[in-house]
Length: 234
Image (cartoon, rainbow, N blue to C red; front, side):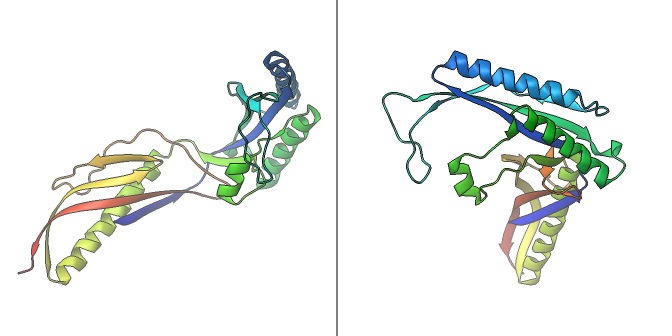
């Protein structure tokens, strides 16, 4: 098993906000959430940031429940009410920002405008915070929208590393034949590619974005399991 990595620069910044409302019934919660989200979008668009896009997710519904001192929901026969939320994402192209200072200023404009409309950051739930070790929300993400080339490079780097492993096996007296195939794990998906003798071939990947909390770089990493013909050393 080997690892291949490749790094690049993000080209887009997303500012992630969440409009939320709670009420005793679903209709009231939805109406209040929609009112907050509409106000936030209107205020953000009024900033007239060039080429900014405002994207809205579908509404999310959940029942309010009593929680334990550890933040975990407790089963109950009668819910306390309904919570409705909607994620709002503001999308900016980094190439259109003249400097990091200009980008930071526009991000602050968006956050302040949302706050005035009663919309804040998307907060992780208690379980997410415990698992990640982070209690605070990170509303800004830097994204490379099309990471296809980085994915290909990461796989090629992994295959190059696999060849080094094969050479070390041979040096240790193990006869390793041709590379039969590679299984790699990337972006939560397992895929198998059979290269045969064409060990430098990389099939076309789906277009996938990768994100980072850094405006300087994004990283693609894949873990490869390599299958060789192996026999006893000569």
